[in-house]
Image (cartoon, rainbow, N blue to C red; front, top):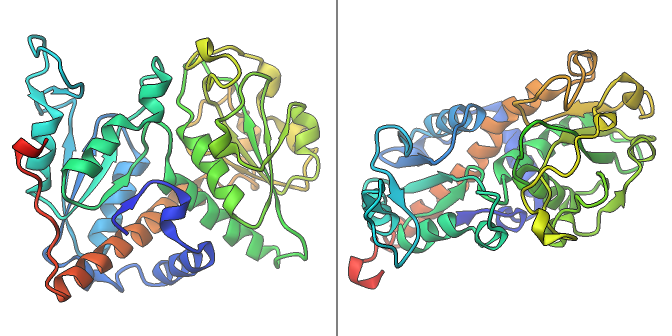
Length: 344
């Protein structure tokens, strides 16, 4: 696996889930894979779970870890071509990327959407430059449009809790619900969650106000229900998340908050409509906006086990990348060096 961005990159989900459970039973089983290998984690944006879980997963696998916070202690980076760099950005990403690649074996990138230019965000401009110019395997630690490590952890969690129910002779009903927020947030988490649930063996429903439709390439064949209460009926898992307007039906609304309807906040009355559903959220969560205290603190809230599974999802991804590196080295096919600047 040379890159990890979308659900297709992980291969058969049944195999990936089995691998996750194997690693969960012995987190240090594959330490030999990471010996003398270095992971570089690059953060253009803040992080808690992603930073800690990814670093822990890499350490479990025996890797050295370098963490670079681009906004603290590094030169400000220019990402656009053809600009006159007479502002506050001292270094261009096109020089920085191959330099970064020369210090590591695998790169993780976290870079959020700007929420002003949909084409720029959905082209994954920053991430794609790392894939193209670093000469190293690259995985997404949340990008402008996706957060696959989170979605993989979500699927692991759903599988675990559905197994505790004895895997009833039906698919679990999983509902992704929009909820209000005070800030404009990206669509990365809901995009990836939708993508992964569409690939999984679940009955998947998305509910949100009209105008908040996710990009069809992520929403896929999910059932879209604009009546939140109807969507909750008989649900086994409720995944709450805010996202700003994706600009599908009205491009001019991209990245804007076009609804603050507090009726969408997940409360006990909403959860009473479900089949004793488990409550999920990627965290951090704004209490009183996304969800009420009584719901997130209830026995059916599984947000903490869900967050813990971030270590496991990342372990699977890094293990796959390390195995490919090992295979390359075993057949004398070393990783490609970063390209010379003349090639950029």
